[in-house]
Length: 306
Image 1: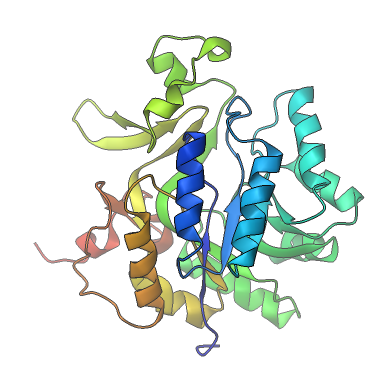
Image 2: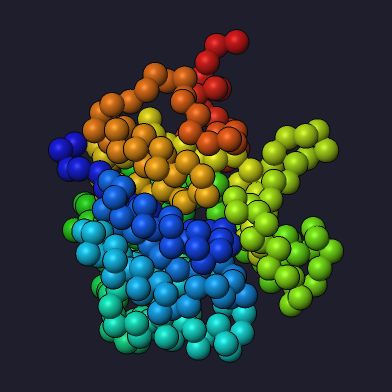
């Protein structure tokens, strides 16, 4: 198991960027050392700068650059229009779909199409993973709050029962925690959700929410709530590989993403920095969930003597 190479995947952009920024980002990503790229709008249906045909066009270019491409479904379906868009996504005919809610799951299974199980499906046990694998699931992403110990036990249990569906771990970025029918970014700007003016684009890496004590607690991203700290599991890549994790997911940021990818590529090849982490982003770091602690905790700091 230790000789199996760990892949890197580039998750969908969770924030709302301009069309030009998306295009420039993925032009650069074509040259990055990642094996899979997940495209599409997974957060809010009001973010309409990019249509399905635009994502397909980017997907074709990335495929020509040697990347495996998937399309992410929306995580919270709120209307019939959302369902129509989801049907078109499922019927795209070119790329596998990452199912992020039960409606996507049902649509893909009814069509007999292969799919990827997103983290929001909350797959916590072998029975659920086996059921979806038999229905066409090609890979799955572990829930972001699942600890290393729990995941290792789950993967071992699966192998003991002949189940070895590739698993991916969210390894870098603000952790997606919750979705709501209310848009928190619009509310922060005192605008109704249906007349938001697309203020999300003013915050290409989300809107930081601090406690009264000044601690960064969450990152607001429209209807999505992310962690305030940025998860960084670079030092855990060897353990992931040894336990049988197939891929580490890197969540796109507006700035400095090439450096993040390069650092993770080096780490998977054994070129790790010292335990005191090199900060790749302008945000506090966390890895608490992975170590069975509070999600916002930083294990490396907790283990350092005072």
